[in-house]
Image (cartoon, rainbow, N blue to C red; front, side, top):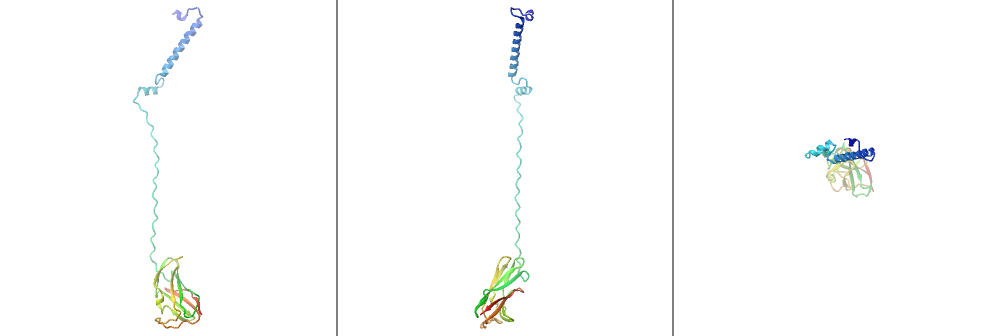
Length: 212
């Protein structure tokens, strides 16, 4: 025991104490390294993981994908029912009679174009001798009329609407007429004449033409 506390030798005692301290330091360093190399050394959680191999890490829940809103089908526009057939009358249609030529020779035939124009909504015009009358006059003298010659009115049903042309053509033979539209009537003499049309009680404006 005395040799440990009082080292014997030819060297100074401080040398022996330094050597002993160095040996102790090396031993302590070896113990520390061995302790660190042991699995889980110094870490209670790692030691528990090593000691319990059946323990599995808790999986992190995956983020749920956000639901994409299902697009709702667009509402189909409701089909508008077609309007009921409206009969043209004096209140919802205008009429106009135009001579195809403003000047003809005596005895020549002349076409009158009768045009219909809607005042408001679309309507259907029934063209026949009962609904349409075309007359040619010279002053107060009635020269010719479809009231005598109803066969000059072509029967038809016209759809009259704004922006849509609806017309009927009435042919005058250039002669005077009488009840029953008998043949052999005299031709209209040279002069100025006017033509007018009337549809369901509504009259057109007078349009002039000349017979030479």
